[in-house]
Length: 292
Image 1 (cartoon, rainbow, N blue to C red):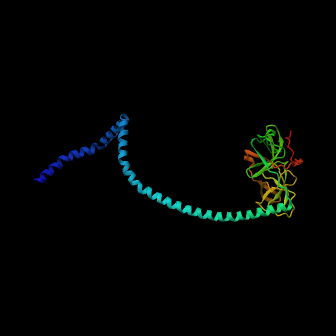
Image 2: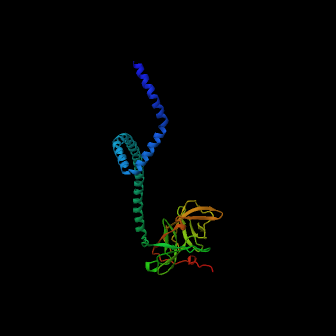
Image 3: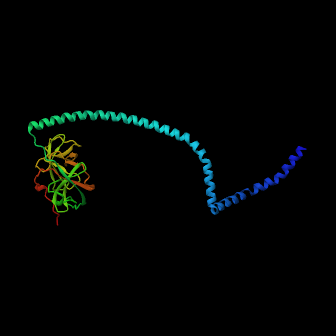
């Protein structure tokens, strides 16, 4: 009896199964179109349903994400702890070195004060500075200068040093009421007495309208090291000794070339420093004249 009933059910379901398989794609397409139409027509309703579904699944997603987030925080904390430990060790070593230098500086300061008192040394007058913006670089084939927005009304004087960043870039050669002209150290007319910081060898820094001025009057046997700093010597009474200018870039048959510490092609602001030396402006540093 059961077998007859099941056989009848199978025979009745077979046509329905075939009909469903035949129209499945069509039904799915119609359902998709219907959903798109509902989404377009009843946008607020669809948004509300989507929001409710998101709210329903949010706690589940939050619970699933907590272990991963916790693990990530643990890994990050371990890495930070290791970085802090390494940084702490580095700072301890650096602090120990700085303490040694501090003690050496205190000893040298005391010794320096004692020698000054013994020699009745007259200290150099304090320097005053004026910061000005570069507004023009009227260069040419035979001279290199810049114009700055500070003049006589601001206290600028002829012969003051022009410094940018960590290095000297030139000197004031013309002073107007509202502006001044600075002759760069790379100009053909620039001549500055200098000293090689390590060997204490004296020379004259001379511009040649290239990006690297050269050193003149160096003895042939003078020890010159590439990378050695070049500073002002203080001779001539124009600048005090020790103003950094550049480093030795090369030494060869073409002479000793010096790379300025400041990038002269990108100078935007200059400090015009009055060291109170009152030195004369040498003929070699006269303001250049444009060739007609």
